[in-house]
Amino acid sequence: MAAYLQRFDATPVAERWKLVRGWIFHEPLPFFAELRQERPILAMPEVTLAARFDDCLTIFNRYDLFSVALYKPKQGSYWMAQDDTAVHWREKSIMKAILDFEEVPAIRTWVAQKTAALLAAAGGSIDFVQGVARAVPIALTQEWFGYKDGDAAAMGKWSYWNQLDAFWNQPFDAFTWPDPAAIVRERELVSVEMAAYLLALVGAREAEVKLGIHGRDSVSRLVALSQSKAVDFDLARIVQNVGGLLIGAVETTAHCVVNALDWLMRNPAILGQIRTAAKGDDPAAVDGYVTEALRFMPPFPYFFRLCEQDTVLGLGGAHETPIAKGTTVLAVTHSAMFDPAALPHPDVFDPTRGAGNQFLLGYGLHECLGRAIASVMIPEMVRQALRLDGIAAGVVDYQGGPVPQAWGWTWDDFRQSGKTV
Image 1: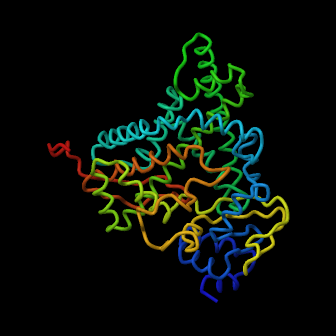
Image 2: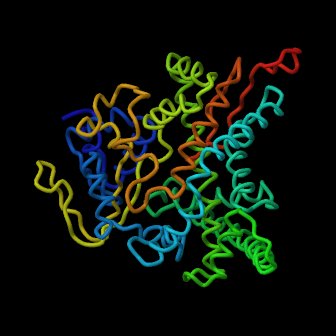
Image 3: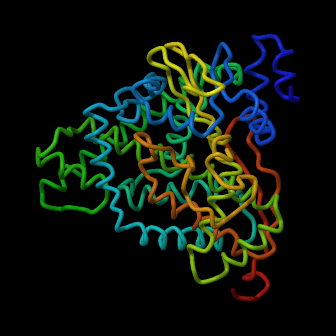
């Protein structure tokens, strides 16, 4: 019996999940290696973990057995809190169409220019989380999604509290917070503010469309589609989906960018390689490095699902385990992305690995809506940051929570020295 599971078995049942959650966030890779080998399905009263790739795949593919029902108290009738329903089918299709794939190269160019401009204006010193990691996706939401007159600080607050409550304040997270209900109250408060702004925004776009003024931003296009009566997509659905664009874009992007840079800075040899690539002319040269860094340090180590009927995981294998209806199941994707049954030499950092057999942007029915945009925005923000010279970065400050809140950076400011880049 190996070390982690020895400690697990010797710990009182009521304290095991707290112990395991600490390992997931602070000692992930050695813990996951032991789990995959010795006990790939780990049951506790609060949650059951699935650590192997095949079992995670089963959880995502069998949405009839493992649902997203735990999101419903946080997200209501939003399609992301539903599985294979008419609303999910229709509205995800509409939103995919609104986020034009053809615009992805232009979005990358815009992200590059915006990130570079923010860094140039900072004069060699910045809080990277607030000044870049959150600021760029907020600006993208203003420029491309239609929040053009939105207040950046308010938008950041709306995204933060909605993400924190939905993804980090589930019943099994309760022991990590002094007052979980306070997070719910903050989410409800900012959601009222966001809804008031969006109702006014959508109303203004409705008037413009009726007057024949048709913008290309997401809100204007959704309003035009709704007014066509071609699909069932009324004002309330527009407001909910436009809100989802903001909520999904800011915090997840910021977390990914910080994690990628943090991991790279902890590994100087690899950092040197990507810095060389970042200073070249090919933007895509950094993409594989960023994807691999996020495999080693993803923003979400697991995705949670609710078991809807008695079933089994690991069917037919030595670790076959019954899963009872009502069980909260964690598909531990961080572990799955290091499963040697799915990825060759998973412990090796390989920037040429590609995106196969990875879960960084979700999978299947609930793959990230913004996958195409995130796939260029995140590496381009990293690329622009690593083009700076003389970077000195402190420790990422999580302020006691699960997401980065502050990160002090300094670098050589060539404007002050009279030099030009």
